[in-house]
Each structure stands twice: as C-alpha cells, then as structure tokens.
Image (cartoon, rainbow, N blue to C red; front, side):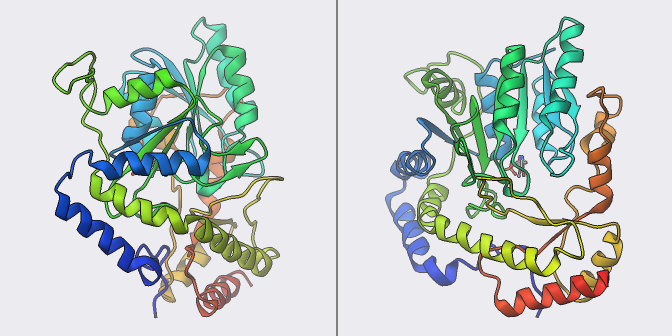
Length: 372
Ligand SMILES: *Cc1c(COP(=O)(O)O)cnc(C)c1O
C-alpha cells in the first residue's frame, strides 16, 4: 500500500459525518457568501489563538496581500523576506510593487535568521531606504524567532508580518502564533495542518485599525455599505461552506497537533543518528506541517522512497533568490549560503496525524535502508 506524504481525507474517519452535516446546512440555507458560519468561525479562531481580531479570507496568498496592504506597504518599499520559503511569501511583495530583499536561514534551523535580516536592514538603512516590513515564516510548522525579528523591526521602524501558513496552531515561549506579529497570516489549503476542502485563509492582528482595513479590502475596499467604495481592495472572502468545514476541523485540531508531535517523536528517535532531524526550540510546539530531514544522501533517500511508493517532497528545491523571476534581487550582505545548502540536502517524509505504526515502521525502514 502506498503511503501518502499527507492524507487530506483521513480525518473523515473521525468527523466525516459532522463535516457532511455542516456542508448540508450551508447548502440548505443558501447564504454561500459571508453566511453566518464565517463570523462564527472567525470567533472560534480568535478564541483558539488568543488574537484580538480575525479576518478570514480566500487563501494564504491573499491573506499576505491583505496584511501588507493594511500595513501600508506599497510601490518602492523594501520588504525583507526569507529566501528559503514558498514562493507566495515574496511574490506578494513584488505584486504590490514593493521590492523583496532576501535573508538567509538560521544555522541550525529552517526559519529566517534574525541576524541575516538585520544585516539586510542595515544595508537598506545605510542607503536611506530602511525596510518597510519584515516577513517571518513558520516553516514546516515551527514558528520563526518572532522576538528576534521584532527587535530588528523595532530598530528600523518596520512592520512585522508572520506568514503562518504552515505554523498556525504552533506555540512559542512568548505565546501562541497569531498575536506575536503586527499581522499574522495563515492558509487553509487542504495540505496545511488546518486545511479546508478548497482554498481558504485568515489574518490575525491586535490592531482594530488593521483589521478594519483588511475587512474592507477583502470586499473591494467597501465602506459601511457594499457599494460604497473607499479604497482599492480585492475579492478575497472565505466561502461559507469552507468556514463551516473548518469549524468542525478546528475542534479536533489540538488532538491532531498532539498526534503529529507523536509522529515527529517517533521519527526523531528512529532517524536521529542517520540524518539531521528538525530542531524544536525550547518552549516551542510545532504543528509539523512537514517532517523534513537534512542529509547529503538526499538523492538516495528520494530514490528509495519513490521505489517503495512512499510520499516525499523536496521543500524547497531552490531558494527564491535562485528563481528566474527574482534574478538580480538584493540579498542580505552576509549571504544566503545556509539556504542554498538546505535546498541541496532536505527531503520531507510522510507527516499527518493518522499515520499508523505500520506506516511509520515502513517509512523508517526505507529511509534508514537508504542511509545505511
Ligand atoms: C501555502 C503557503 C502560502 C500560500 O497559501 P495559499 O493558501 O496556497 O495561497 C504562503 N506561504 C507559505 C509559507 C505557504 O506554505
């Protein structure tokens, strides 16, 4: 039996009938756009992560766009972003006419290194164009160093955004992900730790003003009335049906995070001697969007997994500064060597809450066989 990298349907064995009933209720009442389930789910999310304001939206990319627009980032502004991340993190910066500046990963982790961000900010400030914003990303489910990034942001008067598309639900010593940046964003793409049955996303903030702007901008820059347009916005609403599904999935999300952590512990013990396993920093809880190992034998591991029909992926094949569209983009003066090295060594292996003991034994057997 093939083992998928992520099984987006496995939760249906637990809450399939609740989800189907939630879908049926929405089909029946017909308020498919901004129905009552949307506001109810936003309240559930606020309660879950302790954020003062939650603005749901169409996907994780639009969540980032809404965040930057609400913070006033626009043409010609510089925004420091990790180079080792999903494309959208930097894409939205350029989409707004702003300029991404790439920073390197931590020496012993996957997330962006605050020192590298500082070196990029220093170089920008020296030219009289300090960064307008810094975007951290909670790669593979582990929050970035939001305290370190906040220090840099404060020193340069920059906004801090946390792209928590993979790390919503994660915890840090400073509190849960959702209230530690000026705006935190997430994605409910099916393969994310909290996924819906299509596209979805959300923004979290402590600022009433930013929340009001994002609520306006997700519906064409509306004012108090839908046909009263105060600013340029987007069509970026979360579908009612997705909100109804997500409300059911949120109920079992804490248990699922525990189960993902059990899978990670199993892998840590079984693979710790053979490959570099992902670090969880003191006081953090990861949501394990991915379980990613580093090994110089990556190609052998990939070949063995493929042969055994075990799901795997290389996130990310290329750091963003090596993508053709970002050729010539500015980088932190201290370089991007760690991110470049990561791209050559990483591979992600099956991770979801419903992997069985047999699945785990099989994955470990195949990975350790390739590394022996
Ligand atoms: C998935 C992802 C996004 C984009 O989310 P979508 O819902 O697919 O638009 C942005 N940033 C990161 C880090 C992601 O993993």
